[in-house]
Length: 148
Image 1 (spheres, one colour):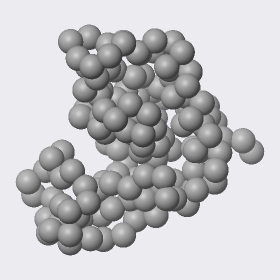
Image 2 (cartoon, one colour):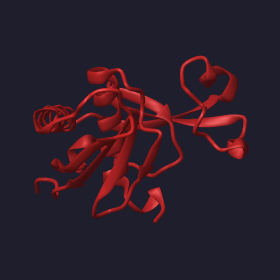
Image 3 (cartoon, one colour):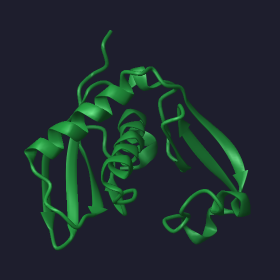
Image 4 (cartoon, helix red, strand yellow):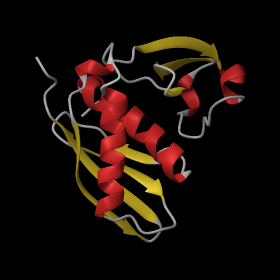
């Protein structure tokens, strides 16, 4: 399923990545499968990750989401973007102009997926499972519906 079919989940992935980078310095996920019902992100991770870690990450993601942050996109020249962002996951044919998605002042990265307009539209983030194997942390998550 395309990222474009899950804007709430895709926006949550941006916030999860921001939390993981800030909390553990592990870098953004190197692999993600984003689906409307449940998603997963894989991180290079060189330490244990237990239930207490999962609850702390979950709480921080939900704190950011509850901040009603605007989600915006701007175009940026590839050369300029290379000075601020890791472009390693972009396909070779991404072009010379990249779309940079910002979640308030919390997170920014090149992205072609669909997103909500505000984090208040995402809903509550829940980590449903996690495991570390061979230096890879896999985090699986779901979203509850946003408050009416």
